[in-house]
Length: 200
Image (tube, rainbow, N blue to C red; front, top):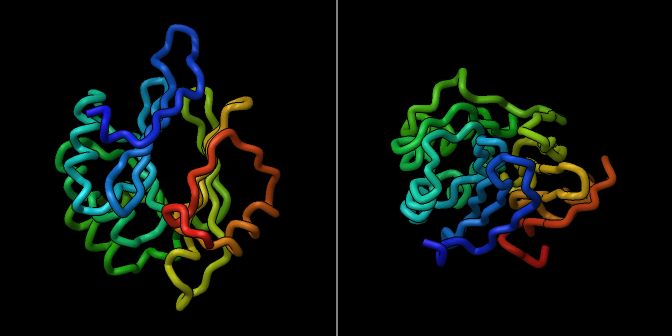
């Protein structure tokens, strides 16, 4: 099972609590990451349908029966298509998605097939923060209008506690990343490269 994990970063361990871990899963052409701390589990994107078995097997190996939050950066299949298969095996409490994509047909189909109800969805319309154990999770979206590529509306996610911090940029391009960086001073240990490491 260890072979399916591309990177596992131990950010730090809190006294007498389970270790805080960040895992990037090798799901093929797509993105899926797990963040675990203080008994909570957050998934950032689900990967493609073809990678669902890898994700499910890793959740089982970790003993995860509940995803406290699933963050979907944008509605491309390589980021959301495994949601139905995952939802059949673990309970999903909350899903967070950029409000731009509320009516996106692929996203709505994924919700219907996964049984995710509207009252489980938080439509992100601007900066938002949540606390998970000792960590703060900051979420925001770049300016986007209908007709632009979905990638450019990708949700940005930063998870931080003290000097331990990681940022996810979905599939946003460099212009969107620059706009978001200008909104705040981010200095992180880990950057999940946007668009699977694209030069843009």
